Amino acid sequence: MNATAQTEDSHYRFVESRTFAAFFVLVSVGSLYQRVRHVPERFKVPHDFFNNYAVFGSVGRYIDVFSFLVLVAMFIGIFVATSDKLEKSLILALLAPTVINPLKMVLPAYAAIIWWVELGCILVFFLASVAVFLKLSHPDTDTQAVSDPKQIP
Image (tube, rainbow, N blue to C red; front, side):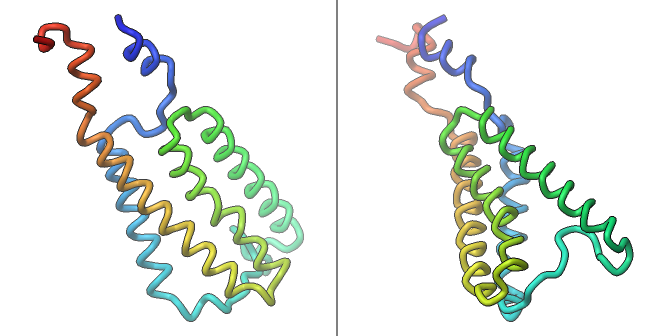
């Protein structure tokens, strides 16, 4: 086993298959399409994150905050565990709109600006997911040539 194979085995990759990478590409395209399709919603200020407060009342607020914190903690755990820089950018671009969205509730005057920042993060998520898919589709020929000594002249 050579040095490049040892370093690749010790790294944790979040996206290991092309199917999972294609899923991320489809999710990012759908998210980008929905965001661009509903441009007038950039001025809308949300009143809840997951739950409808009219249904659950004050308990819904606690469920909302708890579920938001669990979601952010899960994303941060995946981000820290991943060693590939391209996948880190993918996870960060996926996490950013989730973290930024509650700012609309706190700062309703800046809802349109926050919407545009979220749109930029979704665009970065799309580009990073396409890059991860292309990286998995076309493996490096240099690492294959080094790992297979029969191909070296």
